[in-house]
Length: 406
Ligand SMILES: *Cc1c(COP(=O)(O)O)cnc(C)c1O
Image (cartoon, rainbow, N blue to C red):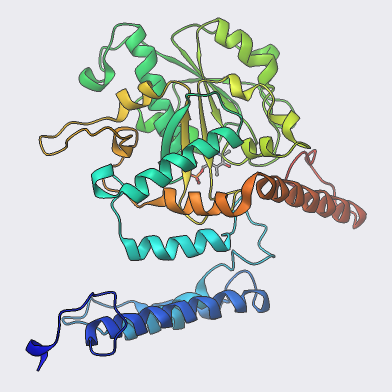
């Protein structure tokens, strides 16, 4: 009987195709479970109960020798997995500087999963590569970065710091006549890395991964809000990477870019900015003054999974001279042909990768410029209200509430 059936598209919803029907039923159920989860978020505690966490043990055990039906797998996930999550996307999670997930970004991520694209090369996904390119341009524009700035869409600000600092390492050593990608760091001319005393831990991790050393840095003293003190900077030169911070994770404070960057540029240093969340303040006319001067840097790391509320994982490495990033990240293999397009894999640490640029495109498109500014202003207003409430209740607020940190 099945032999006489006309061939059909696997995407068709006709009831005569059992595997496709089963898949559709499964995905509809997953969508229902997801909606059920989201609708329940406001009625539960943000943290899971200890019982829910303990019940995760139901998911342990050796891998079964044979298959489990997809329905059962999904059931197990929703039954035991959902209750033990942190309720992150509702209105009551104020932990860290994590964002939620915009409806458009979430919906896009469902579609991206269905597409299952490999966003390594244009030939593997014209859609993913095109949307990523557009989204990168939008971000450059939103953050007020120079025309020609290029970059990579990576998993987060840690990898963005890593990627941008790899570009810096390439540029400085190339200047000194050393090809670090080919010859490595052994025997290379030294590079000095200067960081603020309160640089984010991920900067040190990135420096370690790059062979520049977590401890082999010059630490600049900071003021009471964690801002680098411009008067305490060491002398900088063309073999120096200076790492600034736009948005201290504890206080929200910004290093004084306009006091530091012009002189650092004149000295020939490479200036990198870790602006994981803070750089997005640029999108609000009200808060833009805080990020003034950071656009003069050479590279920037930021996160779209924080303030812009694009789902995990989505970070951005942005580099004024994208050729330096390309020099650090490109690769050659006989089966990889260079087309006319921007190939993400020539700018990214990864080869195969998720099409996270699609979610970024979708989220930003849904927000528009005003939507992004509105998120910044609304969350900053919430932070001020928090601070006022805490002070009124007798608590001491330790930071100057400049943006969304209390
Ligand atoms: C969150 C954060 C990072 C690390 O970002 P991930 O996306 O978690 O890798 C780096 N720097 C600052 C200032 C941050 O807030």
